Length: 170
Image 1 (cartoon, helix red, strand yellow):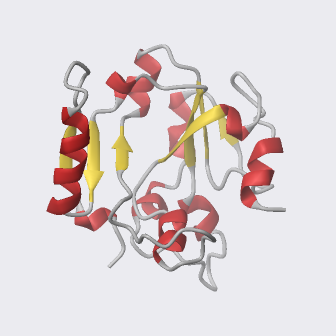
Image 2: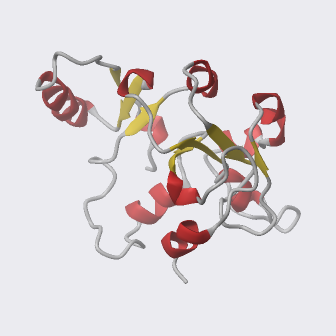
């Protein structure tokens, strides 16, 4: 069964419940496994590389303060051993070292790094655009394209667009 098919049926065991696909997903950090799969051509039907991909950035505190319903995990959402939480006081359950690591492959002494790297923050149903505080892009060309699109919607809140090459794979 594909990961997306699993996300359609994987039950969330806390918060407002539902399944993973009932939520807007965010990773806690850059350099996700999915981004690597897209870069290396491991996602069927996608061959555009990393440049068109952007990061939408907010914080857990901003989401909570806005009254949004959310949950978060300590690892990949469909893994059997992953735990789910609804209280920001439990953010210490996320392995921040692995989440921030550029190199996160499993090792002989820690065969759970890849799962923990994929910890997620999920916002139930939708997230207001005003809660996005930054858009991260790979390079200046991408920044210009994103700013051109944003300029078409100048009546709306505009997050800062930042060139963040370190958030992409080399």
